[in-house]
Amino acid sequence: MSSTTSTKWVQFIPLVTVFFFWGFVAASNDILIPVFKKAFDLSQGQSQLVSVAFYVAYTVGSLIYMGISFLTKGDIINRIGYKNALALGLIISALGTLLFYPAANNGSFPLMLSGLFIVGLGFSLQQTVANPLAIALGPITTGSQRLTMAGGINNLGTTIGPLIVSFAIFGSAASANTDVSIESVKIPYLILGGAFFLVAIFLKFSSLPDQPETVVEVTEDVKATKNSALQYPQLILGMIGIFVYVGVEVSTASNLPAYMESGLGFETKDIAPYISLYWASLMIGRWTGAVEAFNASASMEKILKFLAPYLAFGVFLMVNAIAKHDLTPFYVYALVIIVLIAADIASKGNPARMLLIFSSLGIGALLIGMFTTGMLSVYAFTSVGLFCSTLWPCIFTLAISGLGKNTNQGSNFLIMMIMGGGIVSWLQGVVADETNIHFSYIVGVACFAYLAFYAWRVSGILKAQGIDFDQKISGGH
Image 1 (spheres, rainbow, N blue to C red):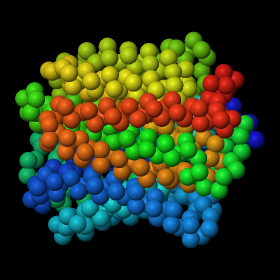
Image 2: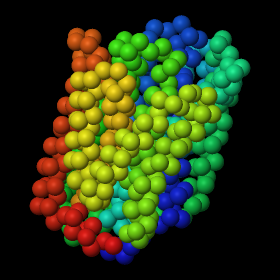
Image 3: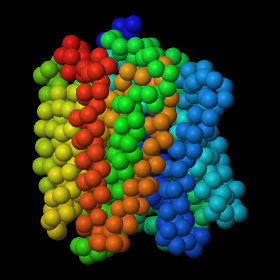
């Protein structure tokens, strides 16, 4: 049985590089959409194929993984090793970026989409490996906190990625070109592909384990006895949880511009800093939730709980200052962050309790946004990012707890449900068309309501299997 008592930082730090790339590319797609729309003379719906190609790749990648594992009568990741699987995923993504070169030279939108799709396929394999591995590189008591920390690095990528890609394509804000050739896209993505390849080599020769013990052996109290991950109710309910979580996270942000334009009269060019604040809010929350992974003393942990979120908020302010945005409207957001800190402390590190508290706060934020107007509603909708920030690691940790040899299979099923980001966003759009954009956020309320239900239900399911996070936490420090 694993005797790990602290996070294996020498292994964890190389691992989080892939989390950074996921955020960097996903957020940078928002830069590609208007570029492709103009260059290829696309409709708004056609331009959204950029997001469709990228997110559908996660589901297709998961299905391919399942098919190969079924045909070879064994889990492919367990066979080739975690480290090799990560490197393979990065190489697949690197190959996808290579398609940007001929696509740009030939002015081919389908080839561009194919490149993004292949990048997403590689990310699907990386996600299947990296999420349970982050949990495994230390004690089970701080597994969700490590995943939260990795998510914070992911959101560092979402914060600076669009800025860097935009600069690479358009130049500085002062000298930005309004007439951009599609060929300006190929060099940034070829450089990104080179980075994928170098990180693949780096991880291949790193100290990351091929078969982390705590993933294979599960927990101290329970052994996995079932033959399929789908026989575990915590996973089945968790798959729905990932679907609606990614859905509410993406749809809240993707519909915010339409609300600010139609409801508040904002110009499109003035909305970008608020979208930036939304994604930075996830970074703020994840940096806060990651504090416990450091195994600091009780007094130092309390200090870090207050320091970490404001450091992340400072990163947001710095990035937008570089972009020459007016920061005056955002200082008041420092008060909203206090709610996040209080909620994080109240959760006491228990992923089920944290999921219940943060989902309830998400419901409250959306209802405030729906029943108010003006900037108060904008800040309410934006704060959803704070309350989404730690939900992924909570759901993921709860869903794969107790799966043992079926952990990789379970992780793959969860990654498949990332497609909720596209489907729930589309559903909210339909509701907005039938009613109005303000009321359409009721879709997000329903998503958070399910997550609160899952937090309550999964606690009983896991206790029946001999897994009690309260006991693990009380005995873990």
